[in-house]
Length: 113
Length: 395
Ligand code: SF4
Ligand code: SF4
Picture 1 (tube, helix red, strand yellow):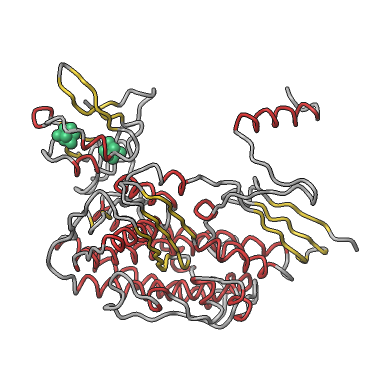
Picture 2: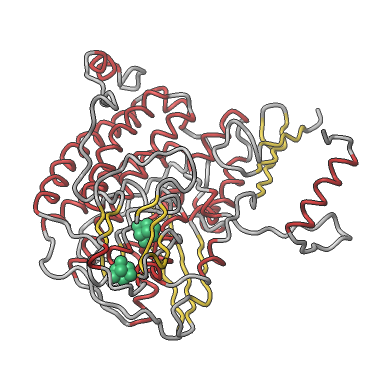
């Protein structure tokens, strides 16, 4: 039957439904285990090979000499969270965590060393 | 009565992306449409020449936010073709799963946008809620809702576990019910029929002549679908049908997409039930030998073509992308003729345009006598300042 109001029963049903969104930040959804969030860097495992910086698509991961050791530094302002660095690393020195709340005020405040 | 020329865009509240439609009107009736593109060219093809193949995986993905996977699939298929690399069967199935999940969420999204364009925002809210189900699946498997970063050259980066499979199958049951509901709504709801029936007619001969692709062509009764015509990924194994309608109007385009959702669900079920065991990634060299390759896939919006020329180094020599929207634009100009101004938004939306992915550099010729001229960014800046100063517009 070609009438308006095909969706009416659904619409009325929605009045009694709980909202789909949660009251962030009081309530939080759990991110999936696969999420690529802020990375964790294990300095002791790193062998200074530079593969991570070479494969990073956005220039977020760059090599620096700190305390006489060449090692990567990650600037999250540039990071696309692709996890290519973690994958390229032959020593598993980079690990992606599920931390995603990374908002900050100034450029250069979110640096992972 | 004289004709009125109405410029819509490049910046206009009705447009989501900058493009220009100059519409010649006779009263309310559209006489002619001139579409001008080139406002959001991003130079991705050129940028790709300066990056390694690994880095390009993530750049190609950002050509489009909706059909990002179709692009990255094309890219990896091109590289693997030149390498002569056969990827593991399990990886092929997972890639197909992503191609289809992407089609699902793209079609749900489009259905909502179409509803919004005709002032039926309830439909918009509903379909976007269902789209979330697909997005959750994508996030669960890949870790991202958009730009999944799933592909690597030689396979996929993440595996589909037993729980993932179960969850995908469960969600498909839910989405199938929803698709049935939308089918019922699309062909019976008066609000939609009044705006979509016999609007934006595209005759089959015209569609063929103007190279329409994807759902736009299929709604004009042309059975083109790269998945069937030149099967890639694991479409040869999966049973599905090419959906066409012969109404040639916007309603046809709605029906085609809703029925394609049902077909996608069928494909995903098959993939999940027959997922082969084995590896998901084969190691690929960094340097790609000299060669060229062309790859095309059926993206949610139609045929997406990528061309790669490699020169034996770590970086591509030339890369070229032709997205479906570009192929559909000439047909859009045709569809708009002899319609009413109020129908323009829904007719344009019916091809599911994605201007950002499609954009080209345009060389504008000033009238007849002055040839085009290439100027630097600095020259352009100075030209702009002068242009405004001449009109006394600067602050
Ligand atoms: S996650 Fe990707 S973008 Fe971020 S530092 Fe690693 S490689 Fe670079
Ligand atoms: S790839 Fe791994 S081992 Fe090599 S420099 Fe980077 S973090 Fe260190």
